[in-house]
Length: 281
Image 1 (tube, rainbow, N blue to C red):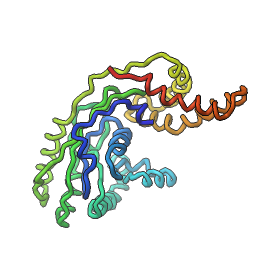
Image 2 (cartoon, rainbow, N blue to C red; image 1 turned 135 degrees about the vertical axis):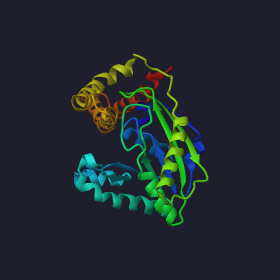
Image 3 (tube, helix red, strand yellow; image 1 turned 120 degrees about the vertical axis):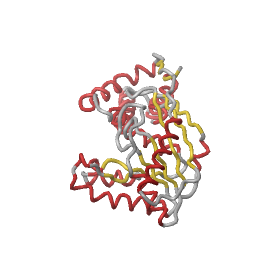
């Protein structure tokens, strides 16, 4: 699904994706949940990441989100009564890295559909401070992400990963400021906008998918058109409904007298053809 939604993901310094041991990843946050999906898909290990706490309110959603590595973090605008729960969030992050795990933090603390870096929050440096006090010094990766579009299928994404070496132990507030400044300088070097434009071939696969895609896009548009969540919700909606669309086509072809085996092969060729129909130039 990700290969169709983002047919080109260019990664600078891909050797960092195989990093072992305690790891803190700090990244910019231009495209909501999709940022975490892409980063998590390419690292060769499980990545836990901090996400806004209000999406965990539903117990079922909360369980599902935690199962894929999400850790809730709460902001004042989501209710000051929840802020005390962040101590558990930070401790969970510390414990994960103490045990050799990897944690991703969108250090700006806000998602905006822009490649301009926003002021950094103190969460990442606070977690590092706690780890340093325990004599745990995780590797720190700084990621700059950039998209050629914040809307719809067929994206080109640039991901530039660098590692901050020789980090001074964080002991007091001034050390946190030094770390944030260093991470910001590194991140600003890592953001490179893709120059490609999305091109679509108007072949059979295009018209096979067009009604389905337009319906899903319209439904997502109704609620998320002018929000930073549009791309992420569209991706999730396509991910979960696409198998149903394919199953309906298999059923339809079978009722038309086409053997189930042949109908299944024909329909499952469509995702492959759809990758061929989207090009970047």
